[in-house]
Image 1 (tube, rainbow, N blue to C red):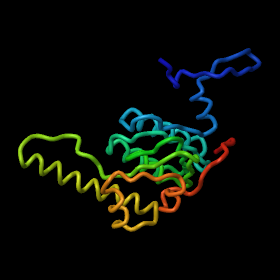
Image 2: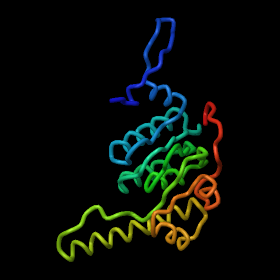
Image 3: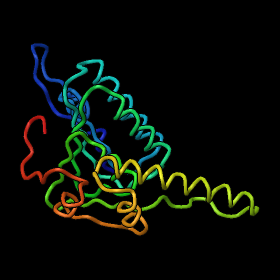
Image 4: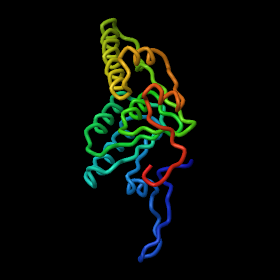
Length: 198
């Protein structure tokens, strides 16, 4: 099975030819990726990379490419907090789909670009655990409603929309093509060409 993390490129130096992981080459150009599910592993990997890039150059831009169906709210919010805390401005680029928690991460970029056929999807957090006593279900429900407010507040802050407007959209799965995302304040531009640093 193909593993993109094992893809390598050939570099020539005075010592000969070297195989370098493409991931390392991208990192040297301040480019990182969120591909696949948002979970503890993917979020922590990106957190480490962002902290490293901040140490290397606290003011230089970082580009985060996103193609993800979303995932864990806790892991995603940890990554979101680090994205807001580092001094490096972060440019987010949606390639394919940024859904659920991945959409929130995309929307939080200092600059937000989408490829022409990419899409965003926002919705309320989902219940991942059911069953148990009435008190347990109430606790889960209360936590879910609080999380719903937090997510809506973050999207509202970064989109310029009101909480009511965001909550109306997140009440069901709401998909946005690039033009629609720009109109709703979720993205800034459509990217038609990728160049160094973009």
